[in-house]
Length: 120
Image (cartoon, rainbow, N blue to C red):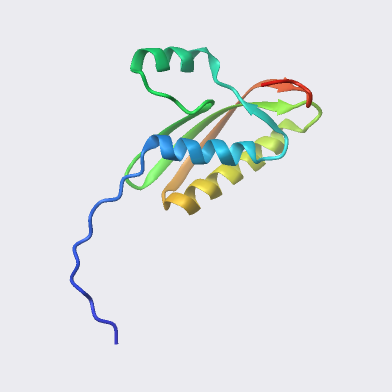
């Protein structure tokens, strides 16, 4: 028989930057993804807020759920719709398994196509 120790539990809060980092790493591990795209608005946000935002990743994290927006470059000659679906799945699995948060959406914006030899 198992006894309850009567310990009080506290809150667990995972920072937005942590979720963004996990999502970004999972995205870059997805075949067909050339790079994450920072965009002009991210540069302005960093200057105004002083925050170091994860390149190409924006997240909204609540107590139990997370929503993720990704801006990417795909490799030329890859089926974009297939790569994006795989990307959504990889990011969802990585974030949910590492954080315990439920990922309610993974939005993907393809901002360009790149060749394998391009520098990012």
